[in-house]
Amino acid sequence: MKPDAASTLIHHDYQPPAGFAAPQVGVFKASTVLFPSVAAMRARDWRTKTGYTYGLHGTPTTFTLEERIAALEGGRHCQLVPSGLAAIALVDLALLAPGDEMLLPANVYGPSRELARTELARFGVTHRLYDPLDAQAFAGLLGARTKLVWLEAAGSVTMEFPDLRGLVAAARQRGVMTAIDNTWGAGLAFDAFALGIDIVVQALTKFPSGGGDVLMGSVTTRDDALNERIKLTHMHLGLGVAANDAESILRSLPSLPLRYRAHDAAARELASWLQGRPEVARVLHPALPSCPGHEHWRTLCTDAAGLFSVLFQERYAQTQVDTFVDALRLFGIGYSWAGPRSLAVPYDLGAMRPDGSLRGHLVRFSIGLEEAAVLRADLEQALRAAFS
Ligand SMILES: *Cc1c(COP(=O)(O)O)cnc(C)c1O
Image 1 (cartoon, rainbow, N blue to C red):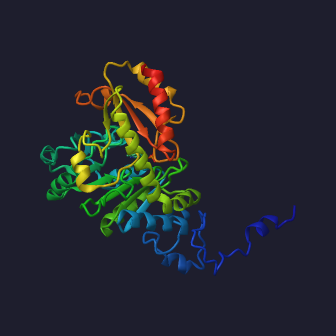
Image 2: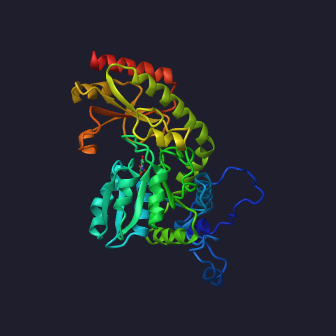
Image 3: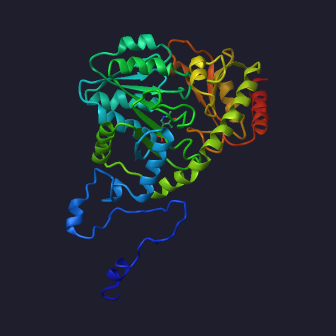
């Protein structure tokens, strides 16, 4: 081998192209970012994000995605993390200390509650659950130790739309920080910051990606000091995202409103049709008057995500409901939502609603981008196969 083969391959003359004015964002990948001198290295502060210091702290690709998510949510600052769950964890770790209490809605995204029950409990942070439809009872739970309130609209399995205005007003009156899991609303269905919410989290894995092929989360804020706190914890934890993943989401963002409306329209058509089926006891979709919290949805939103749940008649056995899900040909059996492919998942209501307020066997549907009529024919044949 040539004695300088390695250095010849490493020290090339590449400069990013000047004058290449494509509106699409390039994929910039780096761990190392070079400084022209030691003085320049010392002068650049990695905390400000005004320049590049190290790949983990941002590249042109990730800075651009952060700016676009902040714009989508109506915020000013955004931190990207490797998953929606990591976004929730980042907020918890940035804001809570031993002795603090956090309030979670009873229908909270399950892994968020598990995080509270395990790691956060180990660090001396406690949590309690509240009924997202009862702002008055919620106000009574806010105490001197309450430092963070999580909101979620709508609940992603049981679909209750919370009394967001009432909950936020109560938390603000007590000076308690609020964070919302805005995955369902995707920054489109309602304006979380306009409601007075402090922190907006999204699983970009869902609508912003839209492809079912990327995992990512975002934490967006308006307040500079709050952002500083979250950003430092983000950096201390070594959270970063890959440029290829960021680029996939940047590519999907322009079609987000179109996709959101298409998922919504098909889901509403199928939800209404299922409501009229004899096998079905109840359809839970925030836009249907039969859904708990529908009145709150109506005052805040006209749009809805392509997500709903069906409660089958109690007289059916769980095995029949499982047969129905197995008989679906176009609906995949799998977690997540907002991808092109429709999905169906049976959930155990006993574990989610031990109070018995929802009865029957629940199946959660995520409507993809297939034609509604084709999905309806699939549902019809599976209902026939399982229940007749
Ligand atoms: C999927 C989801 C998350 C977590 O996102 P991941 O990227 O899968 O970790 C959080 N909240 C809600 C409501 C979700 O649906």
